[in-house]
Length: 473
Image (cartoon, rainbow, N blue to C red; front, side):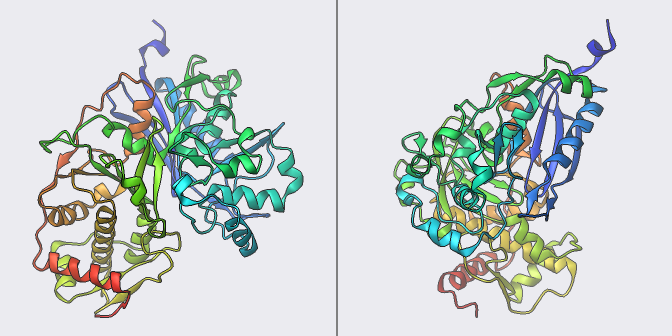
């Protein structure tokens, strides 16, 4: 038996978030056996801030080479953040991939608002910077008409990486339906904007997120030592990857078959109501950053989001230190409130400037406590706006903060609040995509409520302050 046959077979997930890039390998049972990460650095280069695609690519190939020396990689699954697309010409990118946080010229915003579809069609709210992909395309078409005219394909970000790995160009609905203005989720087709601007024909045929597009290119197999039989999976938008394990499952201990509302946490906190009533899409309020995402099966899902990871960092500071129960209790007792928003990237209170009301935190632990209270209350707002009445499941990086989930559980005593057993639902979702017979065997565990003195009164007063917008006690 050769050495390669002695290695364990794994699935590799390329997880490109807004803050970090990870390469993770999972075995047949879904256990992580290999992980590398690096910051997702935005290159501040002309003509606009852009993704460091070549830096990621070279890092990725080096990581795959290391992985190949230890395991047999059977499949690779790309999972990425949304609001990002690659403009592909005859010889690759015709322009660098634009960072969606770039503040596009005001005239582009104003002119785009005149042509973008109504919210009733796309369930996609008008968002700042380049968070609506249609706005990015509109500006690039006007600012760079020569390169734009050379586009053969527009590839959503997960499918860009799949194309680089196997050479096959496709589209996929979770990224197309992620507040792009380009997709009509109710009718499962491109929006009037994409048709009227002549963009829809630039998107390759749509394939399912879990489909195998082909196998690894021969030259990449030679460079990395990966087998030429390694399958390349179409790929998926990251928060939709987090939903996969719950589309047909019930959180442990819920005592109900009711589908949960999933809170995917990281740079963004995105709440998705899987158990929505049919009319919830009609109740979405675009001014609160409510929208319909599209799940891996093409079904629209009522959602709401805020830039929780970024806001947490803004409040916790550059040297965060884990808070204690006493730190949380102290801030509640002295009525120190952080009122939204601490990011300029939308959310339920878009357009407001964040302020701290009451005595300011005096050390790093108290700053961490205030950030925890703030994110728990922002999440509570999201759940209220979604009319979430069933189980709540928390995925992603906030699972490392035990107080966050327990504070929420105290606000929802009649609803199970559960925490995922891993810090990356995106990676688990990518693993599930590679084989549709897989079952997520580890169900989320219900957490006990964290009943601090005065917590529910504090939460009610925070809601009152944010609703009346006074920013004063």
